[in-house]
Amino acid sequence: MGLFQNHIEHISTITTAALKHAGYDGVYIYSGHPVNNFLDDMAPPHSINPHFKWWVPVPDVVSSILHYIPGQKPTVYLNQPADFWHKVIDNSQGKWAKYFNVKVIGHYSELPDFKQSDNHAWIGSTELQPLAAEHTNPEKLLNYLHFGRIQKTNYEIHCIGEANKLALQGHAAAASAFRNGMSEYEIHMAYLQACEHNEHQMPYGNIVALNENPSVLHYQYQSRERIAPADLKSFLIDAGATYKGYAADITRTYAYGDGLFAQMIQSLDAKQQTLCKKAVVGQDYVELHRQAHVNISEVLKEAGVFTCTAEAAVESGLSQTFFPHGLGHYLGLQVHDVSGHIIDHNGTVKSPPEAYPFLRLTDTLRENAVITIEPGLYFIPMLMQEIAGHKDVNWDKVEELVPYGGIRIEDNVVVKTGNSINLSR
Ligand SMILES: [Mn+2]
Image 1 (cartoon, rainbow, N blue to C red):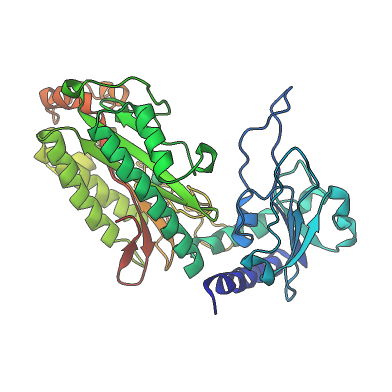
Image 2 (tube, rainbow, N blue to C red):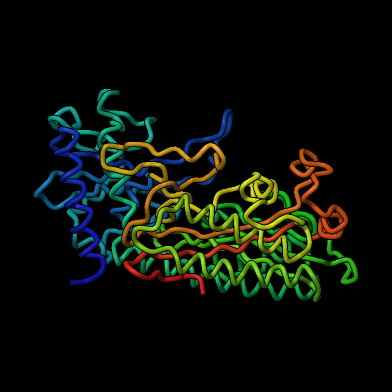
């Protein structure tokens, strides 16, 4: 049986159980559609409802609906209107289509009469909300499905792997553009070209940061200015790619020359690889996050930034100034895939510990979950100001490292029993 067929059977089983759990006989899942900007006839890039993408592997489908009733072949109302303004692609003949009843429609009026469907739920944006509000995105149903989405099918792992291959082409091109002294903007464009993506196809906005800019965690500009080789110090790039709706999310950091910062990258890279290997079934992710704090503190200790032991830096909370974000998150149809804090089908929430409020994943790792492992260390002026003069920090060393911004290294990892698979190396 093919990967995709297995996938559809698996998500049919989950959806059947979810509907039973929430007390529904069927569900409509709406792709969504672009919504124009205020007072304008232009819309921002549209993101397809991830629940729709879970079933239908065709990018850029809009105004379409999936209808699922347990025990029946799912139906897709595929919107392909007669339109001389836009190119209309016939997606109804793809290989995916044989697992569905595909009904091509040209207008909303060709949709079924939703009021005729007894006891159905609606999942999707509410610009189109044909069912009563209480049956629109009901929490009980969504929690069950979100929990089910954590453990990926082999088809999904394949797609995330393909997205990784595309992203790594981009990362190779970006690294070489950096070596050639290109600006952030030029590096960004080299990245897009190498993975053959338009900007709107990226799973999130590229972070392309030279010198001190990596210290801005979600640095969103791409400067057009080239930096002279004598002044070039560091380069951090956090950039992904998509494949059939699935995301990659990879970060690399480079030093322009040899020296302390280059050694710190090497040291963190080795520790990051060890953390990736620990992403096995049964691993408590909060504990792994704490382990990352120890590892990052070890790098800062080796570099001479910390004068106390690594353990002491973690215990006192000092390491949080240099590693203020979480170790990672689930990855899949969404970059920050849903349910990072949900630990069962009922939607029971496990909040991050008080010390680590930004941790996006708090559960014990389960087979075939795909996660990111992204330890980082940064010299963020705003945060360092809060601990100015701290006795366990060598501030001369900090001053030396501030112009380098920081380091983050991020891979995408499949959780397995006893081992893990790194999709990004
Ligand atoms: Mn990430």
